[in-house]
Length: 356
Ligand SMILES: Nc1ncnc2c1ncn2[C@@H]1O[C@@H]2COP(=O)(O)O[C@H]2[C@H]1O
Image 1 (cartoon, helix red, strand yellow):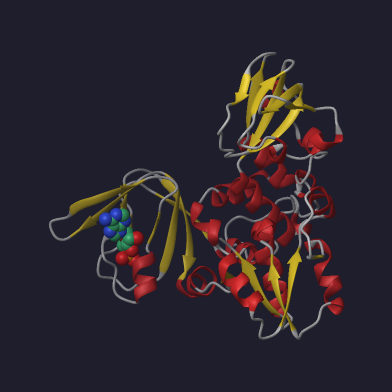
Image 2: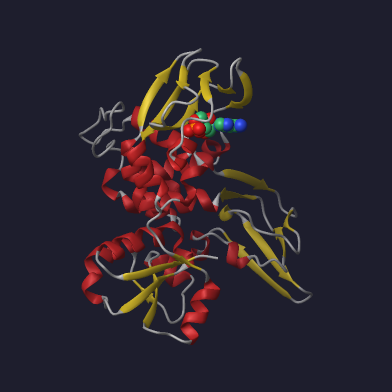
């Protein structure tokens, strides 16, 4: 039994936490599955002074004491409203954090959450309904809204690839629809050295050898999570090596045109905070900061001097925006800011995403 089930960390219980409440059911399940549980006893030291927070920490049960210096001490209680958000901002790095009672924390990888939020927003109506269009091999069995496990497994296997982390999320849904699933057998040659490039591949299951020359010399072994076949597509030269399956497995492949369009040409313009500040000091045009997080996230940690339109309302709020203004989407919006940038640029707004 997983700790998640043991501590009743389910889709239903976690949907009351922010911003998990923004996730579609498919992604919330995935985030819960990939999260971890830390159980503590009264008196345990949870964070030493000088700690760095690598996760979003949800205090699901118990009370903790946050102690700064000699005299400042604050209790964080899982039963209070503030604990419906990650407690990260309540536990600064110059504080020591101790458990007052038994309890547990739930840890969520911020990158995973960011992606899941972005993809939930980019495809809100696709919850458990399978692909919208064009899925070549994985077809939804559950067009009427039942849970389609095969499609879910396929989507989550693609979501595992870090390759997609830095892509504009608005492209992801279209991109995933273009991927074709291919079952392959041990000994099968997937790519032949010196051939023209036609497909880009993700290795979902099984392992493969990369070999060069004649006689063949192995230069690498590819395991699930690897991708290959990009060099010929990026550089327009012939295949640099052969790729041969070492065992039966499963691949996802993407044709050259979709690869170039959806993976290779990033559509979003990024601007560093320093560049933004320089432009702000001597603006050549009107500028505005735009935060597209949900209302509860925005109210919880407000951003001063910033326009707020939740991403879910952006399409309906375009008439409130001004095309003579350059909009800078805040970094806090993570990949949802990228989606917003897509929506805005599709409607001919001038838009940039702030990134450090
Ligand atoms: N040394 C290597 N390690 C891992 N992958 C490789 C190596 N050499 C080539 N490849 C992959 O094998 C692919 C063969 O086709 P491409 O040249 O299109 O792209 C190549 C890379 O993706």
